[in-house]
Image (tube, rainbow over the protein chains, first blue to last red):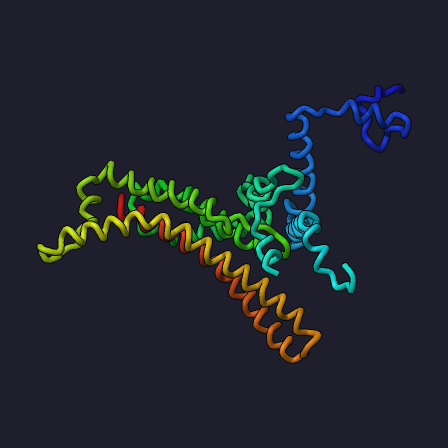
Length: 86
Length: 226
């Protein structure tokens, strides 16, 4: 059965078809918003919206936030490393 | 050291794009909206907290004042969560910027004054003159009361900015001092580290208290005017 490239999931796309698969994704604002919404609900329903959720749900988000801010400030933080020659 | 001390307070832009908007919107992700009668643990905890706070805060208002419930509760949640997130390492706290606090304080205060002037004109103007003042003192007292009225939004904004900024600066300074002291004398470094731990506990408290104070004062101004 031949499924067109358009509708395959990422894991089923062959390596040669990857550029055309990426190009056919929906890059309109509505499409990007939809991607963010899908990603958010995927994380939320897996880790937070469960019967016995724990602290892992939000602490992963906070850890990612700390990492994001670290990457943002890296340029200034580079000078504060404990090295003899900067 | 001077430049590195204040770099954590500049508005974050990454390659020219102001991502400060993203950072301001980030706390909203941590408050999912409840969709069922019995929700997951995170949402249940938040619901319980909001109910507790709103009951305590809105008990002093009459019916007209209680229409501000949504505004006051979202205010305390926003300021509280933004301040607490600012205690994470390397993060940017929007409430350290005076511009943002003025943007929160001035419209809210103007709203309370406008409501008072519109619905209870005589009573809200009567606030300018406390009861039982001797007759010759009246002009001066009116001027003083006017000044104290107009200072309210400024005080709200500057109080929040100054408290949070001062706390962050202290943590930076004492943390830097602890690091520098480890190579000189370990015992002094341990003392400084204890001070740092105590300061961090204080900062947690200050973060929450400042949110509470801001909201409480807005609600107080509202109570005067409804």
